[in-house]
Every structure is written in C-alpha cells, then in structure tokens.
Length: 157
Image: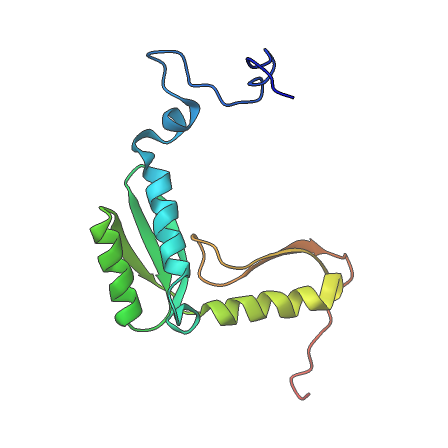
C-alpha cells in the first residue's frame, strides 16, 4: 500500500525554527556558545587518561569570561599543562587554584561521615555534607545541636 502526500499531523512534534529575525532559546541563553565551549572542554578533561591521579579535583566555569578555574591538589604536572594548552587552543582562559585536599581525600571524608548517618557527631544531628565546592577548600557539615549538654573531655584520658 502506498500513500501519496503526508498527513497534516506528521510534523506536529518536529522542532521548529524561531521566527525570522528572532534568536533561538539556546542562543539567547548562551550567547556565543560560551557555556557549550566550557562544557566541551570539561568533557575533554574528564576523558584524559590518568586524570584521577593527576591532582585535578574539579573545574569551575565562568561563561561570561569564557574561563575555567582548575581546583588542583599538588604540583603542576603534564596533565595540568595539557589542560591549560587545550583551553588556550579553544580560546578559553584556564587558571589554577591550589587546594590542600585531594579529590580522593574529600570524597573519602564525605563518604565516611555519610556512612555514620545523623549520629556522626555527638550531640549534633547531621543534616548535610558538602564535598567539592568552588568557595571552600574542605568539606562543609551542616546540622543542628541536639540540645544535650556537650560532654566534658578529661585531659587525663
């Protein structure tokens, strides 16, 4: 059986171009594709062999400035230099912010506390744990005191 013509409803779900002279939604939300460029660089970074042992913790993007900041633990090395060079090749400014703790240390600390649950600390109900963040070098623990008096520590113990 053959059909001549296309039913009127065949393209109802097909994407439509914006009206002439109107920017599309993606372009208006990401002028110049800056966030896309940064996302593509991040994808390239996380695909690099040996990244987990390189000192790389995370990258923090600034789309307005078309830049990224590498959160880094330890000395500069070939991986760090390769990321900086790849960013430069893509027209992206790459900065490095040194950190005291490695990605592995931060993840281990979060997992350890999370494994202990709400009672991870005496006299304190644990509500949340934040691991890798741009604004803080370490982990953040949030919760509320239970109202019980704090236990005295014996200096002789």
